[in-house]
Image (cartoon, rainbow, N blue to C red; front, side, top):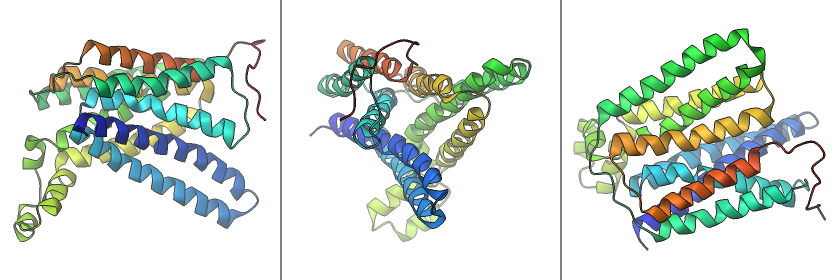
Length: 292
């Protein structure tokens, strides 16, 4: 099995775990209202899953294209929708079903065809790209204080942008340049006879690793803040779109990645699927699939 196929599969599992864990965290809060200890245990288990998903994504980008791994972010929405129908007995529309189908079919295209891996690493471009996005959203957030209606959407987009940047810094932390910046050369010399341990330490203990961990925490905190200023049905689509688009554009700019045309079709399928799953249905639209 090629590295590209493994990367797509691991990304699918990681994003599914991440979004399912978020759904379970919400359930945990409801359970805690009646059984505090049980709710706390459920929340801790879900939180552990989110941490594990971060390391799975780190492994996925180390094997394959950050652009493709970023595009796989939509797969988590499909998993949550299926979870809601099967476990929570929620209703789903025909639009949702079409979106799930697109999201689940897209990885087949992206794993089947192969593009050109990014051979150029531009840390200067990565820092400039990240700084520019953060600056734009900070200004937009400041201006949005006068417009309460759009404040939650802008803050949600900021959260998604921070989450998208995580993948780019994860990718760089796994490159030769990233590993060379490790802070623990002395420790490495003591484990030189354990190459796997040495490689893990290289990837996890360098400035880029610290950056993606901080960005991940900030993304979660900012998203919670966004929910206080707007409806989730309006925030989630913007968050999801930025989570997908930021690493995709970054892969082109910072890593020089080139995809096969069929892979671009797969990415378009993911984006369309995300829109179908997350966009709020109009009033009066009939529910097409009823729970059993």
